[in-house]
Image 1 (tube, rainbow, N blue to C red):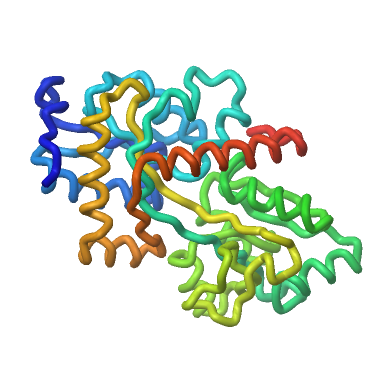
Image 2: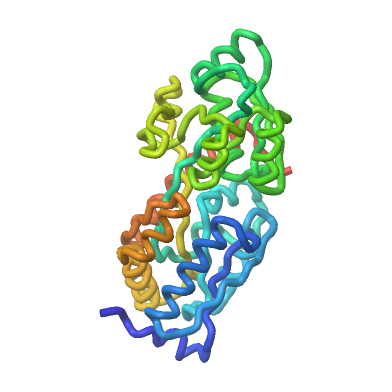
Length: 307
């Protein structure tokens, strides 16, 4: 039995705002709309998705951090969230301390794709040839400080291969330039990468998960390419303002788990290449603290800025 969502009634909120820091059509926006639909049915209130794109998700996060802690505002974040404190030292909120975890929604690995004309069958060969030729590789990221950018900065550091970062305003623009051969590589989710791979427009060099993907059984992991213990997985999660009472958090966690374990919801999420990951708020707490530590160290060591 789900806890009664008296938080919305107490606040007088007829509509609960599910805030997402991306534009309509982005992966996080799609996930948010699935959740809003499910929560509307489960919790008996109207949930609407409110898009607040810009500033690496900080506009959306700041809005929710300063919202009434009554359950009337939820924040959907992805795995860039724990890194923003290190990237933007003067934020008006703390990405960890100013929120309470509801739970993880799902995870997705990345596929490193390349222009078909790039020499090398897989990542190991591409890195070896780049080293041998002393020629830098180029990488199209979805923006400075994005998870894709930080993942490739880590690969550049650990492989010793010079990789030039070219920042785009979105993944589609980066992918188009890979297809056209203007940049060598890009990271994409499996759902976005597979149609291009099947059409022969790009080739898959590696996956960032700890195991090979069933849909790409011949494509090695980055670890198999010789970069030890290299795993970088994208994730989506739900947060509330820090002062939100425990019963409200519990209500949302139960509603989230109900969605993630229902067959229709799971199918729709998996169709986007996202694996549902139901669990307690404490699991997300640990993930965010661990990611904040990893990315903060990388950002500091390499002097990465959002510019």
